Image (tube, rainbow, N blue to C red; front, side, top):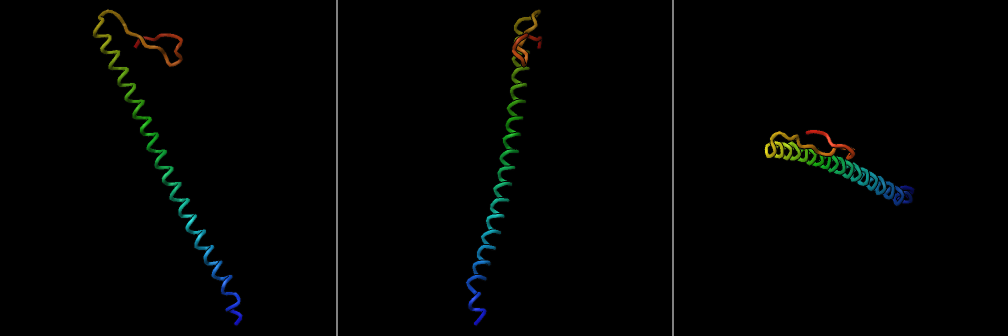
Length: 85
């Protein structure tokens, strides 16, 4: 008879324990997915930066070939002075 009195409380504890474990595993999976998307964004940014550097080198090379005797220049990162390529 005593067991029957505590059965609802034990069921609730079991339910909350299961719910807690489910939420924890969901949080871990979400964190892992966030880490993967961050890694993908970083690699995409690096690829875009490399493509920009390559395009800049190719453009400077084409400008050098088009105007022999002149050194093409591009703005420096600060944008205040021009530096030879």
